[in-house]
Image (cartoon, helix red, strand yellow):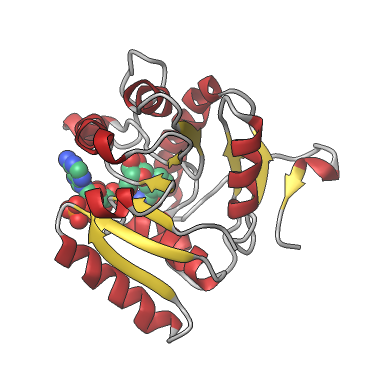
Length: 230
Ligand SMILES: NC(=O)c1ccc[n+]([C@@H]2O[C@H](COP(=O)([O-])OP(=O)(O)OC[C@H]3O[C@@H](n4cnc5c(N)ncnc54)[C@H](OP(=O)(O)O)[C@@H]3O)[C@@H](O)[C@H]2O)c1
């Protein structure tokens, strides 16, 4: 069992998908939102679905952030920087922030199958620049379809985990592997998040074209490179 996981901006499909999957695996979850009531409503829906054993609560982003040092960030790119600046006082050194943000062009009226250029290289690197010293940003889950994550079946998607801290990468790989069907792979440095984020735009285009919920699989690595629940 890991410490409580706070999911900031956790009321949208990406956040509720993670909350559902981790709560189902026995993790304790706080969903964060700009509205504590919206967070409590989202938490209640998940608790209803999973039954009394599930530990899922909701609170404001600031309170959720203050209550945990294991955080996930699931907001649109256009809200990422402002939210991280606002939460800076609540982010504790030693915390891990799992960032699933993708800089989709749809945020500025473009197509969701295209990405925006980010000065720092990627949304995850932008997050790393904004968090206080001592907070480790780990990029992960950008390629997992929220539709699939919010369902009950296995999530047929590899999760490429990137950060500057190998121990934090391993911790997030362990968390990802708790989701049935997911295989977590150490993706190396945080700068590789740029490529992983781009893949999401491709997947969105493919999903529109083929009317599906595609994910990715990386083949041919040694078995020890894949972390999964099997
Ligand atoms: N959807 C997917 O399949 C998927 C898959 C992988 C990665 N992602 C990435 O994960 C992130 C979240 O995706 P999503 O589909 O869940 O997005 P979303 O529904 O548009 O937004 C998620 C939540 O973020 C909060 N939010 C929205 N705008 C905000 C702003 N300007 N400032 C602060 N908070 C804001 C909202 O919560 P409150 O109003 O309750 O605060 C909202 O419920 C995105 O960066 C996306 O690219 C999505």
